[in-house]
Amino acid sequence: MSFRISHTVTNGIPLVNLHDDSRTVTASIVPDHGAMLHAFEVPLKNGPFNIMSNYQSAEEINRILNRSYRSSKLSPFACRIKNGQYTWGGQLYEFADKFPDGSAIHGLLFNKKFEVSNETVTDFMASADFTYKYNKDDPGYPFAYTCTIRYTLFPDQTLQLQTILKNDSDITIPMADGWHPYFRLNAPVNDCFLQFPSAAIVEFDDKLIPTGHTKPYSDYLTPKQLGETKLDNCFLLDENAGQPVCVFSNPAEGISLCFITDENYPYLQIYTPDDRASLAIENLSAAPDSFNNKMGLLLLDPGMEKAMTLHYQVKTGESA
Image (cartoon, rainbow, N blue to C red; front, side, top):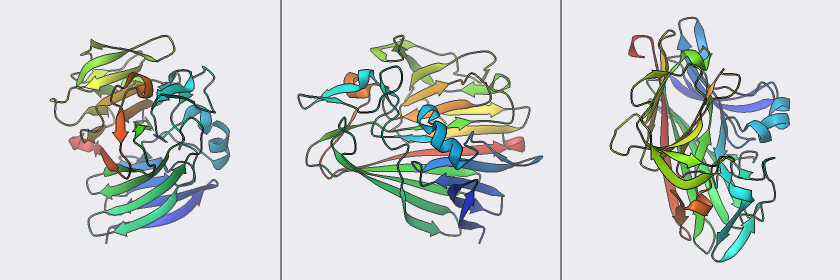
């Protein structure tokens, strides 16, 4: 059997590893810190290569996770909420912890300890579930819900990330879901190419809060080298464009990363860090500040479950 699951500790970081030994592919998850994706290692011509920009030690996670949010699960909201406030059911709520710019940012689960709730191995995949029961931990979100993240490694260097949300409250609650990974393709971002079928760009104010308006945008309908371009923007994907919804590639190295989603991730956030060593490509169910602007906001009824699915498929060599 080529698929298996192992548990290891690397530089103080406990990991759950999904392996496809037939292709030397490994996906590594950190349960203790939001069930973040720590590694997605694939074979390149010079050996195994991790496409995730990750943390090098447990000490680094503890020191900078709440500023960098690399690979964090964004739940129950994605990106920023203006002034950390919103109104729901006629009541004003305010989050306890805020970013230096005054907004609430990137949800409430990025630093939570998830439990490994299931592991499954077959001839065709290796899968692990990670579960956190949120119980009104922050006054800004006094609603109970369960978040389960299921990582499944399939053949052909494909990793499925499925999020299952369940409302454990007795009222309908607002929710948004997303991911905050940083990807690297063995070259500076400037040398890499990007393609995604955008229908529009979400208009931001100077604090990266949506104004409620969108504008036409078509810069990356075909593969385009990033060069010196700086991005920190949210795009509305063209729902009629088909799959994949984004391709990040480095033709010189013969590697490309395809993003394939269900209909629940219609927004795409792209961010180019100053060091240009990686690119944040964030699949989102809703726009930033959706608790206020309602752009893509999910309303989850009592007892209701919602599943959202995303795939990362790495192509190497001639297939890239």
